[in-house]
Length: 174
Image 1 (cartoon, rainbow, N blue to C red):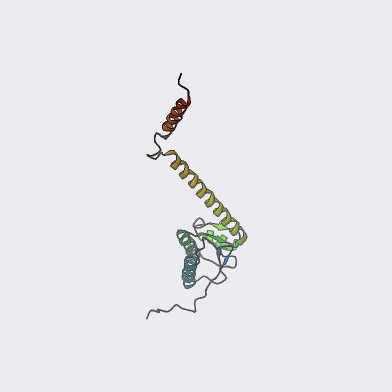
Image 2: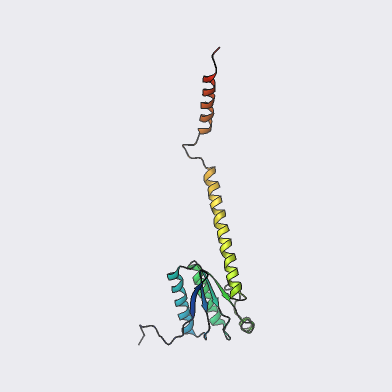
């Protein structure tokens, strides 16, 4: 029989918002049920909190296989699709070595050395987004300014003609 109530025996990952960023501090073993619960909780927290940045901190994880790494990368990419830039931080050297030796795809998600570097990288990404948004606004202003509206066509010559008529009207007739 299928359970309709969530299984409370599945360990949960600690999540908190720090500097407008959702931080997941993974300090448990990553079994399939745990990974599914992590994903569900993570994406629900992004939706309910509205954060646009997240870090999945794996610095306490001592053992990870490519399946668990892939699942975490998929969760990070799902968050990105939802509009939250997400990084993975703190993968230990031994874990990184094992993952690469076992054929894990290192390019599936953006990673940083540690949580501090994760915050710095997310700040850089936010600055890039602001710069891109400013550029887009400037470009749209230039495009809008270069297109003449129908009521503006001929205004310059009309103004010049009006000024000329006024100057002629002020000149005394000989």
